[in-house]
Structures are given as C-alpha cells and as structure tokens.
Image 1 (cartoon, rainbow, N blue to C red):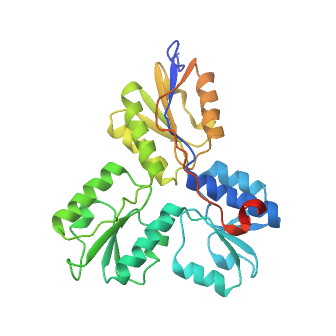
Image 2: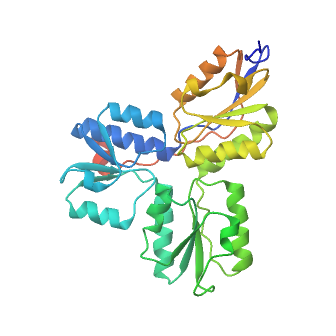
Image 3: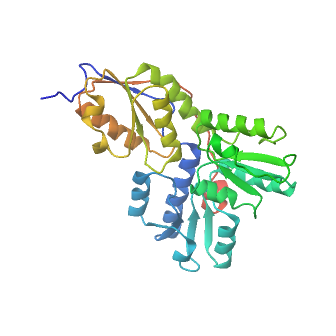
Length: 321
C-alpha cells in the first residue's frame, strides 16, 4: 500500500502576503454593517467577492445574492459587489428606488474613471481582461461603445481600430502581471501611439501575491492555493506556480486537499487569493498537518497596511460626523 503522507518532518511554507486585500475587507464589512443597521434581508448583486466560504457565511447572516436587479424588491437595500457595475445597472437601481451601497473596490473605480476620461477625450479603448468576468462587464459598461476586449496576445492581431492615433488601454485589476505585460507589449508593437493608464491598473494586492509566489515557488515541491474556482486572482496564482515549474492545486475547502498531491513532499507552499479568508487558509493548514506536515513557517514578504473608507451611510457615527 502506497504511503500518502508527507515526508518525515515535512514543512509548510506560508506565503506573505496572502488572503484578504483591502478591497475585499471593505466589501465584506459593507455587507455586515448593512445587515447590522438595516436587518435582513440585504440584497447583493452577484457574489460580493469570489469566494464560496465568504458567500456562504454572509448568506447565513441574511444576505441574499442575486444575479440581476429585477430580483430585488422595489425600495429594498442592495449592495453592488467589489467587482463594480455598469452605468446601466446604476441607472436601473436609481429608477427602481433601490437603496444602494457601493462595495466596488476603489482600485476598480479608478479604472472606471480612466475609461470615462479616455472616452471624453475621443479615444477608443482596448480592455485587457477575461470575457464574462463581472469586473470586465462593469468596466466596459462605463462607455456606450468605443471599447474592445482582448484576452490574449493573439487577440491583439484581430483588433479593429478606427484611429490608431486616438487609442488607449486599461486592464482588469486581477490579471497575471507577466501575461498582461506580454499583451501590452503586443499592443504597443502594433499601435506605437497607444496611451497607457497613468498608473498600472493591476492592483497592489494582486501583484504582491504574485510576487510572493515567485519567492516561494523555488523553495517548495508543491503549491496549494486557497481560493474558489471563479476567483480570477486565485487562478492566476496557481497558473504562476505551474509556470515556475511547481505542481499547483487550488482548493476552497480542506477536504479538497488530496493526499497524493503531497505524498513524500518535504516542503509544501501555501498561499491564498485576495478573496480567501485566513480562517480558511488555517483550515487547510490543519488538513496538511493531519496528512503528516509537522512544521509551519511564514516566509518573509511585504506587510500590507492599505485600508479603504466605508460608504458614508455605514460609517460609525463618530467618523461620519
């Protein structure tokens, strides 16, 4: 019978940083504060963040997740997810008299503002992102036309632009830094005059977590990423580890960790996407310990201290005054 436990004295190396970013912290706190202040149900358009554990926890507290606003009773309280929404959704909410709290990550809002300015200046815009992702839908919904989506380097060759001299690009905030760099290079090669954002759109947390995986991967034999299948930034962490030559798996529950992934391994890397809570990461650590891991060591890395303010209607009275 094959021994599916880890090697003797196997060690878990914890990436730093990992888990919640400031935008996710803020979005979850908005839902929890709205529930405390107004009572259940509080409606949330789409998943507040892409993590099954978080969504289930908020649902148990009275949050009701809907796909579209027509599922929300007129006059009810609704929260827009951290991924942002189109202008059409905002207008629909106002027309239906909904009480709105906006949990859009401020870094996504920054991209929305960029799109508005670029379109006002007459630019066509290339958005680099994943088709069907709520953030992409929300960002492209800031303009009535004049935007085109590219997902890969190959897509750049098929883009049709009316005036290459009036062209700009923006990106989804949760992409792979390295892959996005390749797409931007292809755009600049085809359209040398293309305008870029004043500051890169990929968020600080996405980049920090990818850099932490780059630091961790050479030191381990396998990487476990804590995150849900629909989490863009978590998927990018798994793909990055694989590109660095390390087997990598993504899980969002401890029972999903398969013993054969870590059988005989001496060093196991663990990270978590920006929408995955630390409590879930620690439950994965417990699972790895049950499979034979003996030591846990936190790696060096950036200490994040970013924080974003809450919407005025949900701030503590002493702060809002």
